[in-house]
Image 1 (cartoon, rainbow, N blue to C red):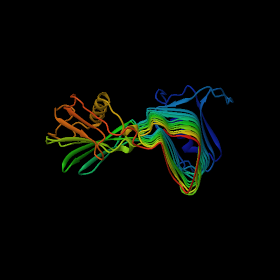
Image 2: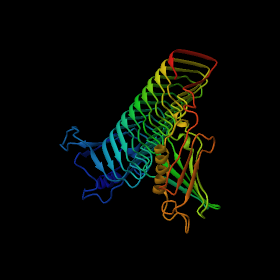
Image 3: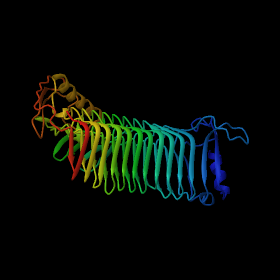
Image 4: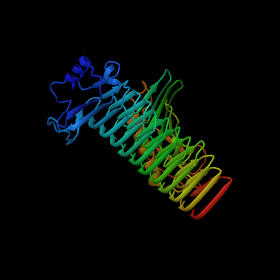
Amino acid sequence: MTALLVWLAANNPGEDGTIWIEDAYDSGSNVTDTGLNFTLSGITLSNMAVNSLTIQGGWDGVVDSTTITGSSEFNGYLAINDWAGNVTVNNIFIDGSTSHGLTVTNTDGNVTLNDVEVNSASGDGIRVTNTSGNLTADNVNSHHNDANGMYVNNTNNTTITDSDFSNNGQQIEIETDTTTTSAYAFDGLYANVDGNVTLTNVTASDNKGDGAELHADGSIEITSSDFDNNGDFYSYVITTSPTQLSYGSYNGNGLIASADGNITLDDVTADGNGGDGAFLRTDSGDIEVTDSEFTENGFLGGGDASLVINPDGGHHSFGIDSFSGTGLAAYGDGSITLLNVIASNNGGTGADLQADIVNVTDSEFNENGWGRGIFDDSFGYGLLNGLVTGFCDALPTPYQANAFDPCTDSGYIDVQASNFSYYVVSAQGLDGYVNSYSINQYADSGLDIEAETVTLNQVVAN
């Protein structure tokens, strides 16, 4: 690749072209390459940039052949910038980049990604930004990246099919000023587009932040997709004046979808997320959800848990505002239609629906509000120690000179709810005892509707 980029810079051909890369190529072991990172710049390659570019990996290496037998591997980033023509990337595997994996930015044409995989990048796995054309991604997989699996911003219509963005957000982002250090989680898929978003057979699960966060000036349509078990992240805020450390959990949502137009979900699952299963909002369109499930969300809804430690010793407190994650939250000015939807066993409300017209048919909203319900001793003990373990894993070393260290020092921790007394837990040190009691099982509603017109048909809410 190094020799090719030198040749292209010297000759700058002015026509559509394809860069063929053999399937045996591995940038990390190729002795002719002097570096692992490669950039094709439309500023440097000005003649090429007005034409279409295809990077085709997995080639069998036979002259005049177009047979694809696998993928080509890069161990650094691959960037395509400032391109006026269409950009297509096929059959490329990027592993272990110390920056983002694949970046396409400042382009005027369409961007197409086929059979692309990115693993273990220190930044985003894939970034497509500032593109006037449409983005199409098929069989794209982005896993175990420190930041977002895929980050899309300022593109036109975006269509993603048969793709997986899971186990991302492995590295927290830390922001520090003179008094405070904060940490934040990242998503499996983030998209903020000028046109429509269409997802088909997409998985975004087990990410530290949200599974997928989508914003569209047009409509959003999601079919046969899963957004499960996201939001397992512990954050901290260290304040040096006054001396205090606050620690909390960021409980990401399975799916966030915000659009000016219609939002349509068909055969979508959002289960076991820390916050809401799905949060949908449209400014001027309608919302339709069919054959979908939103269960067991809201373990610690909304990032409301916090651990406050006074490093000088004395009283240390842990508080939880509420276990409030909603299975399905949908808000709009038009109509909301639910058909064959299950939103049960969530920490907060099963479904919260607000629109002018709400129609719900053949749907179930059972046993919600368990987050404000019954807790036994073992659950309380596991909750406390789980939070402390996550806190200790995230804590910088040392986070403050001569500070009280909750990971090693013994101390009295008083644990109680901060907004309402539904349970109290007390512990001596970090490995002490736990006592708990509960008030009011299933405190939230199964189905909460605010609308001018409501139609319910074959609906169960126990």
